[in-house]
Image (cartoon, rainbow, N blue to C red):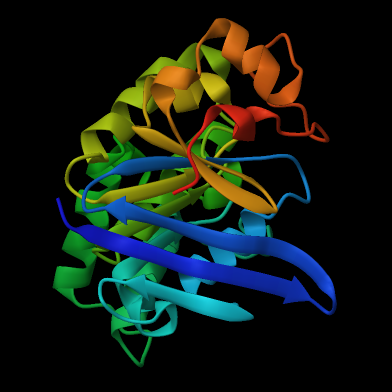
Length: 251
């Protein structure tokens, strides 16, 4: 498979503080990759670099053979939270149609736009909620809607920020299966603190704590989980210190 995302010795600084140091890795076409790391380790910065919102202090980023800024139209993004006015009368379909705005100058939606939006809802198995007010949904339902909005832009790359953050544990397996269906049809990169999600779905993991390393999910088994962030459960400690770098190869 060809590489669709390439970071070549990328550094990023806020003022004089080094946030990402010499990141050098590649993600292949239609690969499902997870990003993990402690708070402040650089996960959000990495996402912003992928989206072209931030530019590297040095080094280069190539996405689909272009700079991140010019590849943005081919990227669907699901934020962890959607900032919106809860009093604004937006239906689920209204929210998903916003994903079509990347392809137009005006807020007029064609029948094709609506068909694509509905197909995106069907992919996430929430088409029956199309006319429901977005403010009335549960956290897990909103996560699916936000992914559907990202899918409505017909992306080649899908970026997910904590997709399992608001999912009811009883519905996790069903949600995982929905994401597995998407995998293979597009490149997916997901930030997550949920190691169960990482182990069950993604093919490889980007571990970031200023330095960036790549792990195969084969490493993320029982005793290795405890060594990575000093935790006895399947959620990464928010302020942990990553010790996995001793076990992985620097790509």
